[in-house]
Image 1 (cartoon, rainbow, N blue to C red):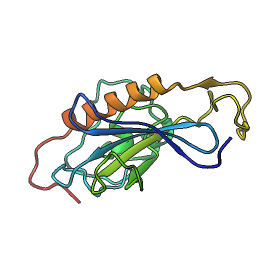
Image 2 (image 1 turned 45 degrees about the horizontal axis):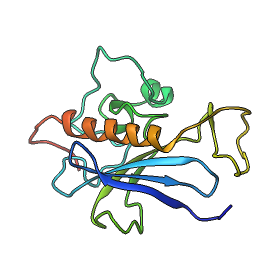
Image 3 (image 1 turned 180 degrees about the vertical axis):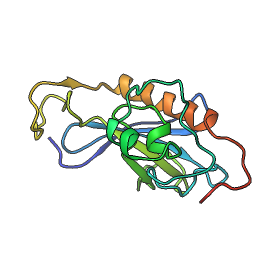
Length: 161
């Protein structure tokens, strides 16, 4: 297989944000959702505390990583947004022809315990077995993240950037 990442899909989500799915050179998919410079989280690191976010108190852990929930603030993107394995990335994603270059992306990967690479790629994981997270699955997670990026932002005059 090729040693380069492959953009499998880049589209405007139902929430109006850009979504991208990239198949990495190790055979795992990563999902990204981009926000423009008018969004409250533009330029914010995924583990940075911001005033415009609060973890919904009655919500279960869901698909998030447990470590940020136990160790972090309840006002960071990696705690607030419920996505496969939790957020593991924030920043520009480089050369993706169809998405505007000015976007700030929040991303997650499908290379966790229980995940497997696409057939034909070497499994570099220390875990055996696992589930290949399909393009449709990752698109669905991006759609969910995009909706959360729109609905879980509180209006505040003291948003930290």
